[in-house]
Amino acid sequence: MARLRTLPPDGEQGDRWEAQLRKGALEMAALASLWKSRLYGLEIIRFLENHSRLVLSEGTIYPILNRLKAEGMLTSEWVEAEAGHPRKYYALTESGRARLCAMAEAWTVFADGLSRLLQPVLAMEETR
Amino acid sequence: MARLRTLPPDGEQGDRWEAQLRKGALEMAALASLWKSRLYGLEIIRFLENHSRLVLSEGTIYPILNRLKAEGMLTSEWVEAEAGHPRKYYALTESGRARLCAMAEAWTVFADGLSRLLQPVLAMEETR
DNA sequence: GCATAATACATTGCTATACGAGGTATCTTG
DNA sequence: CAAGATACCTCGTATAGCAATGTATTATGC
Image 1: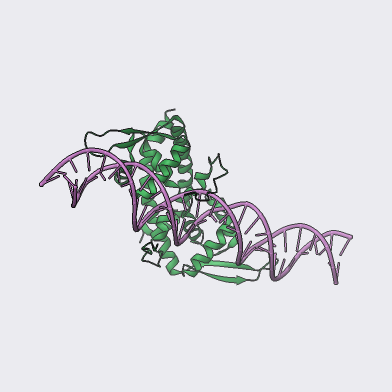
Image 2: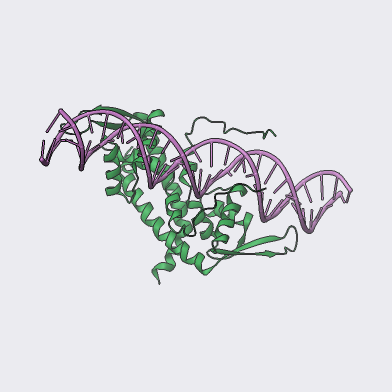
């Protein structure tokens, strides 16, 4: 039965897969950015951009932060800036640290598994 | 008609994040499983289970395979088995190989970025 | 003062993805 | 022919990411 499909305009999804790849890892990345010190929203975006290759928009980071806060993984605090708009700083809670540690371990397992899978592919690349 | 929903027991998404983490990587994993030789559907599931830590269900793998086939990344061929149900073998096309190579490279960059991010966290774990 | 710009936080709507549950088809065994 | 094993396929739902858009506060130009 015709399922009202919104056929992807597509054609090219050449770089769509890369976007999908990141799903779920962003939450971990957000937590990781707060490991050393508290940061405010836009600062987290810039941090990730500088320290990894992740580029997130505001529409991505704020839902994540709210989610994590609702789960008790982090706290937020409004701080008046000397100049400009006040900033909402986020900081890890104990739960947040624990969760991040667990995630980091699981990530390692996951990444190692995939790396093993890709080893033959990457090996071929080198000898090209 | 009421579809007997098995609402994920949880509520707690403590381990849901791990499922999300994998999104998008599955397509690459499926391609990678076919690098050395052609395999049929259920065989791919078993391969990934053995060679990495990925566990996918049939409802996951078949849409992926159809997607990849529609994009010309792989071909399929029915093969009569000596015994049992006939099997549909999937094999990489040239495009599929090229795409997998590109994905593998991007994955490496992505994984390295995240690893760098997690380094402080993992470092702490070791000295615990 | 008032318009404009800059900074920052927040929300809405769309699309795509993963996956449980259920369904179909083929072959074997008793 | 019933029961079971093997294999492929599909539908419905939950959820995530993200572009676009909106709001609030402060600074700057005239």
